[in-house]
Image (cartoon, rainbow, N blue to C red; front, side, top):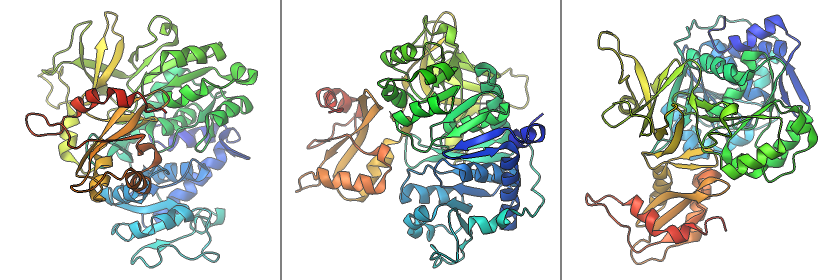
Length: 536
């Protein structure tokens, strides 16, 4: 029985060390080789002073070293923090400081881009750049007091593993922090345990029927829980995982055909673009299933994909980082309920409750509440938000002395008479674009900090390919014209590309609610015509 996250690799390595575990262009790692690299990283991290539960930031593209660093950190008894490689210095610095990262794994180029940020991270002790040799390059961050830069190869002892005892951990201990946008401010860290991640892998494998013969394609960033789950799903079954870094839709289709991919999980914006491509016969022959998560898959896109891939099963899924995955729609229900997000995944229960925490009747709508072993440990260093979202189970018997914690999704769903769920919308103002949750406040803070507006709001507008596009509605500073070019430049410099605005609308003043807040709902209603041109 595998109880800790690294056991997913080591248990398969013990049985079939020569089986392929990871593939990237031109390279293959067997389970035996991967287990050895994970063990080497764990020993190196402990040798660099990593304490139990201390955080290791992994700021890398999708590649072998990212997988080794994350699972190696877990094997050492630390907690890994995947950092989206698309993020800019502002967001990276927030994450490093917020969870007091001790060790950072990155590339020399990314390290140079955040060099000034590192000087503002007093808890960071060591930077470990891959593709880097001290004797060949200037030491980035050398001027930062207390930060040591060590080469990846040297730290891992050139392949000669020095065994150092790992810190003792149990399955309930923290092993990862995934940062996700909340409805306000900068991203917040969702704390996950070994149990969360191992149970999640087993649950997904149960309904996807994953076996050691499967070949899964990882197309989403490993900093997203859905992207990372392609690793845990594959490793739990002893299957092969093929890594693609920042692929185009054509890259994905070609990889499915070229690598004999049997399982593909992606987000609707990527499927929308892939549905417009010609799928080769090799892809249609090999792909056992494709799964969509993160948002509702448009019916037209679903129909085109099913026509191109007639032998593939379709799984429509719904999840949230705070509970990994909550529901799925079985393939046999697709024709009857193509708009449904299904029912609870194995080993989880999903409730739909009204504002008074009473279960809603069939046909009613309410907030989706998730209970079970996949519920995260809470938000890092944020007891107020944790108390808001992670609450006692509303249906718990009063006789139980220790309350069970469930997670409130913030999503409104409808339940039909057969218990199937349908996504209605968010209770907050989150923008869902390109598969990412985006906080409007994070965009707005950049505009205010740059002194470019008197006031501004960011809202989401329907976008055929992206789900939603970002629209900025702004009032210019007094006596000035609104400088759209300056706003775009500031957003490009301070925010990742997926947060950038697709449209900037000027208003002399923004509407207010009776209590004085900006009325976002009124803005969306007033801007219907402007939104219609967002994809132009």
